[in-house]
Length: 238
Image 1 (cartoon, one colour):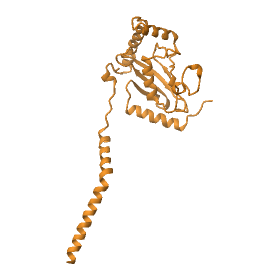
Image 2 (cartoon, rainbow, N blue to C red):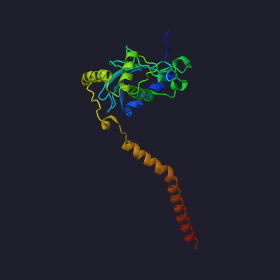
Image 3 (cartoon, helix red, strand yellow):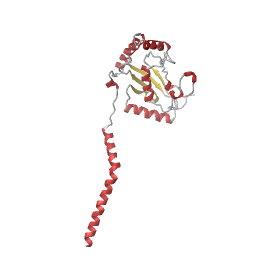
Image 4 (spheres, helix red, strand yellow):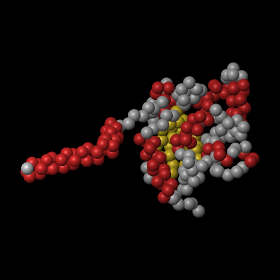
């Protein structure tokens, strides 16, 4: 029987989605698959410049459990991705998305697995990092893992792995054009710089002055008025 989503899961996902819309993170963008469903997102992952994945536009679905963030989401690539940690059906295998149980057979430490302090930002940044630094100790795609190791051990002389990646990256360009997405190609385009909105800066400055000086200025004005009244009273009596 399907579990009903918890109120805390709905609140957590709504806040995370709003945050990622207002302050996008370098390397990926998110949107809802359906406006009525906060538990399934579509993610666009951009390949980092100066790597094999430069210019890539990989799409994936992220599905969240009803008790998120106490249980991890799952990620499945919609784009074809040849990678040691991606299954043939597109499912991603990464420690951060594994349930927080003690499993000595996995070779993973409990601290490497999911915990409720993780969020979509940390997950997707870990995925981008994994593109360039695969985990070949427990691969989801053994053939890709063997090929990657051969490429790395040969210091790039064995081109089989590299050629497959570059071909896949090139194939994503048509999808980016179809989606009207401009893929960042330089570090300047890839890295997002955030600046505070003018209204936020003004509000901060107003709060600063109000908090630090407002009460003191009011007190000084009241003291001046009190002194003037006393002087006037004193002049009237003499």
